[in-house]
Image (cartoon, rainbow, N blue to C red; front, side):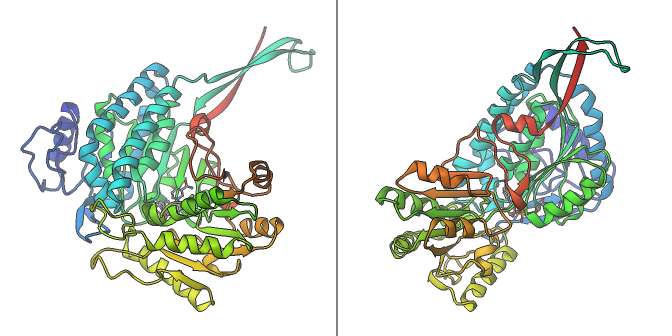
Length: 530
Ligand code: NAD
């Protein structure tokens, strides 16, 4: 492993030590520059980040592929069981000290991480863009800045009160203890070692959403990013170290398949698994974690419904089209919260379908590094094939493909699916029930609110729904009937302090804002005689 992805003198020194260790693979690119130089060459092969140093993988590397060019971006380490166990042991060893640091020290480290991410943005964005296929607009505005915001937010979070005082209660004497006025408090304590296992799409943002609140509360972390885009997450190792995080508090292991995550979940040294990914994998993890009562936070799949009520005026219809259009224009629909179904009152149905058709037809599909591109590729050939199979299934089941449905002619390389609008689907069609994770919107008409609610609630998911109406009070009342963790009224905009999570098979638990601090802590009740 080369040292040039380590930032700062301490990181560089440790990284070189690790690379010189017996059994380490030869370094592909010697480092001619200072590692802190913003434009120093990027390594082609990474190690795991364990105990504050690069750990050479015994089983070698696997290639990380640029979804737009199909070229190799870099080589990620292929973990074996011993390397995962080492990372957990490092996090365990660091827990006692880190969990007892003063909150202001943790806040200072997290603040510094946010500064460093901002400083290094120019260097990180091309890497993140290459491994995720995100467009320039998305990669530059919503990858590094959002991750930095999350570290900044939980720097403040580390200083939030962790003690809830309870009013003293007069308690009668009993065989247990003498009576008296008994005082008590509920105190938030860190859970311990947290395994953060994440999905592809927004690699460092997803990870920052877990790591920042976990560290703020005094936990230590082993991260296992998605196989498709792990390199930016590996880059976080030296950045957190340079920010002053003690070695072992944050570790990263990677692997090309399920094995690294499975081993991590089964490790008895892991106290909590914070998972973002598909519902199918979430169920497997919950089953394994349940065997030893490991804590879990599950952020899973979605099949969001945008409901356009019959009273929707021009403004509400326009908002609905723009919100649903984000399924095409925002990271090619690889978004768990995307409104991938639009349920429209029959009186407005053809008008809304025509508006969506117009919107989708105007989108430029192309190379994500081109400034004019709105729709980039999907993450992999496998994901493109999966989405295409769903579209073919919808066609066979009799739905109408209004726009798209075919592989675009250009670009010639890359894993592209054209923005696709499927109308006249019925709620029981596979394409209307299952999560595709691609640029595909399904439109369904309804006749009354009861029917809209039945369709919206009629999938196993319940992550994010939307209501569009001229009457916000009516939309508010409808929200109460939606079995969904989040409801947007006349907007797809987010509020950064809300609790985020899903009903039903979209997940268990909540993070976001101060709720994120609760997710990464256990309540301890402390009782005393006053
Ligand atoms: P995935 O479930 O295939 O993989 C997610 C992670 O789990 C990866 O790191 C993967 O390597 C790991 N993994 C796979 N099998 C495992 C096992 N048996 N044990 C432990 N770890 C295992 O998901 P994906 O394809 O990377 O991402 C797409 C999914 O993520 C979609 O369903 C999407 O809705 C969901 N997602 C949800 C949110 C949310 O906040 N709710 C956010 C983003 C993505």
